[in-house]
Length: 157
Image 1: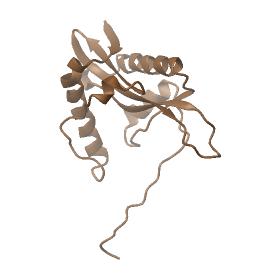
Image 2 (image 1 turned 45 degrees about the vertical axis):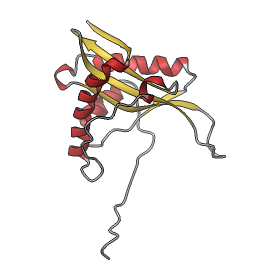
Image 3 (image 1 turned 90 degrees about the vertical axis):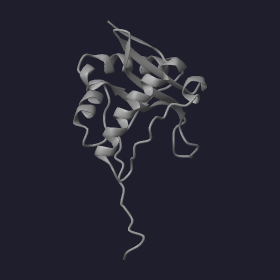
């Protein structure tokens, strides 16, 4: 049985192990933007009331996590003032995927959002990550905007 709970500092090593998997994917999908960092867990993830980390345990082992941020819209006249939950990072060990663990973590995200007055959940997914896109669509997400970019060649003309 899978147990979803709020992460504590003693979970840091397991979360960092999962971050390494995430970073490998990020480097594979967009090497122009990502490098391996060797771990990203900081105390703010556990202490700041505007963010939370939930872990998924199976057989006494942490097999997944989600790091979320409670956000408020920017102070721009044309934007509605609204709160949202931003999924900063989410990972489930590859050998435990397609077993409903990500959906259980998403349930914790949605509950946190509802408890904190958020109106929606937002995240970003690499366009090449077809499994991730399928997962988010299955969990009620829809594309609302696309991020586009243009690399600049400063040195040459």
